[in-house]
Amino acid sequence: MINVAVTGAVGRMGSGIIKKVVEQENMNLVAAIEVPNTPLENKDIGEVIGIGKTGVKITGAENLEEVIGSSKANVLVDFTIANAAFETIKKTAKFGVNLVVGTTGFSDEQIKDIHKIIKESKVKAVISSNMSIGVNVFFKILKDITPLLLDYDIEIIETHHNKKKDSPSGTAMTAFEIISEKLNRNTDDIGVFGRKGVVGERTKNEIGLHAVRGGDIIGTHNVIFAGEGEHIEIKHVAHNRDVFVLGVIKALNFIENGVPGKINSMNDVLGI
Image (tube, rainbow, N blue to C red; front, side, top):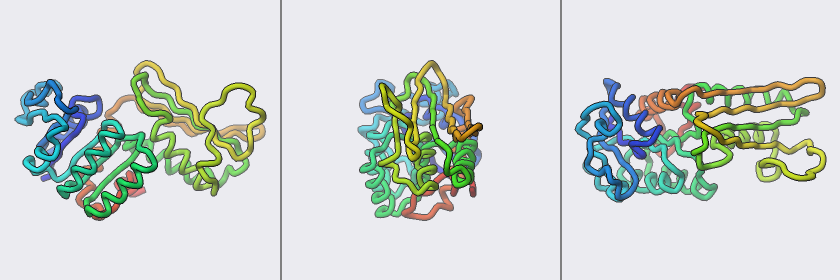
């Protein structure tokens, strides 16, 4: 049985993950963690998110270590914000609890430290900027076609709801990194984050990244390869958050087979 703890428990993703976890025959929800000093402390998470009593009380993040130690969780799922998730990863790994993380917006230094934490604690981890099955197929397509379009101009456009905090999205940045690697270009030298004013002609090596924010758009990612007389667009559209939740369930089922001390990607989970 997989004992699951979830942070950001009443948020969009957290509540969706909890709803799906409690439906699984091989999973137990054992902890629901919210922001520090939450007014929802000790309320039943199921009653708060509308699925009925679960027997699992909401806990503030200030008590994270205590609840992880007492709940017998063997995997924690985090879809929160970068700084909070970083602290959660540090504290959770100390207890030998495995991790499934879909939080984005980590700094380069945080990413470096997370790799070190996972390696030293020897926990199993799946960390991905996007856990949608379709998005990870989208990444695979980008890997395959980029070497065939070396002379094409490349632009990345991502669109999300008006409450998204990081920009560009983690998915857009992953696409950017995949393309840059396939082009043998350094990401520090070629990324152009939006354009304004008289910027002159587009250089051949640059890759444009553009973020659109509005309404309740779940997530759209579009990569344009523009050549002479033609262009190719690779596009993924998420119609609802269920696509991410289903990816989390796959990651939870995979985690037992993960390599201790290694960060697995959704490629590993999906066998891509």
